Structure formats: C-alpha cells, structure tokens
Length: 364
Image (cartoon, rainbow, N blue to C red; front, side, top):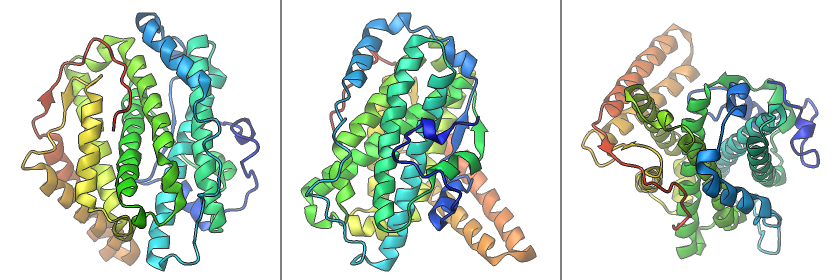
C-alpha cells in the first residue's frame, strides 16, 4: 500500500525525509509498537450494510455532523511546560505521545486507503469520516510533540513503516478493540484528572473527553460491520481468534504501560489498577458484539501478566547487552513470554450473548 501523505491531511504533514529520534521510534516494528495495516480492500468494498441500515444511518449522520470539528485547537487552557518537566517523566511522556500518534496515524492511513480504493458508497463515506478524525488526532498529538522539538515526520512514516497484512475479519477484531480500548484508556485518565486536577502535568489531557468519544464511535462502526455477517463472531474457529485478539491486546497494553512508571506516577495512578479498570470497561463494552469475555479476575490473570512484563524486560535488557550472551538471554525471555501468553490464553472465558441492538453510547 502506497498512500500519498498529501492525501491524508496536507496542512499538517511534513513530507521531508528528515528522520528524528521520535520518527525512528515510530518507524520501528516490534511486538509492542503500533503497526500499520493493509487488507483485502475488494472484500471490504463488498460489505452490505442492509441488515443494520437503521443503526448505520444514525451513526453516519452523527459522524457527518462532525461534533468535534472545532475541538482539536489550542486555547487559553493550553499551558504546556516542557522546560519544567522532570527529565525521566519527559522521556516516558514523549514515548506515550509517539505511540499514541503512531496508532492514530495508522488508523488514518488504513481508513483513507479503504476510502480511496472503494466503490461502495456506504463504506467509502464511513472511512472518509474516520480518516478525518484520526488525522486530527495524530496532528494534534504531533503539535504537542513539536512544542518539545521532537515531532514525528508522518510523511516519512508512511513510506518507511512496515505494513502488516490482516484479513478483513482480523482488521475488525483488532481495530474494534483498539478503538474501544482507546476510549476506555482516555476516559479513565480524564475522569481521574477531573477529580485530581493537580496531577494534570500537561494540558493535552483536558482534550481527552471529546477525543475519546471519537474513538467510541469508530468502535461502533466496526461493531456494525461485524453484525453485517453473523458468521464473523460465531463458530469455534472465530471464537478462538476473538479470544486471541482479546488476550494479545490486553497483555500488550499491560506490558507497554509498565514500561512507563514515571508517567503513571506523575498522573497519580497505580498501573495495575489503571489497566484492570480499562480492561473492565473494554470487556463490558465488547459484550455488544463478542460472544465471550476474558475473565480478568481469574487467579491466573495478573500473575501471568506480570510474568509477561518481566519476560519483556529481560528481552529488552538482552537486546541492549548484545553478543551471544544477549542473544541467548533474549531467546529465554521470548520463551517465558510465550509461555505466559499460553497461560493467559487458556484461562476459561465467560460466555456472553450479544444484544439484538448493537449500538451503544459512551456512559463513563
């Protein structure tokens, strides 16, 4: 896929070839970094939304009205102080912003390409609005990074980042979860800082409420897409795949968050509490479409997430060490991570029966 960055948001994008440290961070492909995706565009163009038409039209009308059109603009409440930020916090906060920017821009690139390659008016209209939203999000985060002198070169990213091919149904599972967990993450932080404004160390958090409502509506779109074909969320094989994506998304978030202790300390949240709260919100929301739910209160859940975290820490240390010893240590860490994932994946799931009406509205 060769998306032209000028087609994405020409007013905000830098298409030069300059590569900053943050651009290199965003370009790197690892198990924990956000990825760029490509798929079978022809198959997605054949989607028929007739079976969910009433709910579909309401969602499209909401997106067309563009409720957040004027939201992603700095105002008098924007009081960023990078110079006064603790150096360790600055490093982790930049990592958080780069990861968030990359994830948002990944959605923008995929959605824009779905719109560009399609002929189905329903699908093209949907992804045009979603690409618009994700472009705003990525641009807004990048503006915050630009103030710190470390903006990501998004134009370079479209050319240098590796693309991962997923079949459409895997795009549905992964992107649905990404959008809904994004909502749960942002609203949990927003509500916490609403109660504890003294811990809001950067103004970008003030923009999270309306922002996460975009994420919520994008997840609604994928819920409707999955409802157009009931086979996508039924059958033994698909249940195994849904279970896999739930386990992978949750465990990745846990490991990534524990790599930012100073960031969460500054926010005044315990990482384990925060992650469990986000998992709980996401699991509750996902009942709208998924026939099963991970038991995050199972005795094996937290111990194996911790094992996964420690294994990735061992792998990072081995990578820095290098040499034969580092290679062997990295392989040992990878084996521990794989075993932890198997133990998480095989936790008995909770069966759910999705409701007849799929649409939800944000309530947290």
